[in-house]
Image: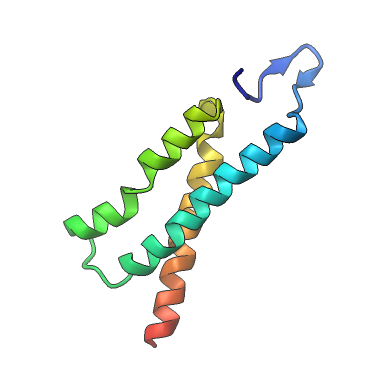
Length: 99
């Protein structure tokens, strides 16, 4: 069973309650896993190998979780936004702590 935002004759097919919980879990995982990565990324040299790894290390885990739970590619923008938000929040926390 694939969870998607498929368009039908009536419009977008709504998600079931259990699908909504799984979608929220994936988005929270994308956000939560990137907060500490953004925190550590703040003190690394920009464009260094460590900086690159800290930005991209969570992506395979998010993709694996998304595909294992049956969500299709339509969910990539939401998980990407959550991951970027986690990186930004984590880096701001570190910046405030350092100043």
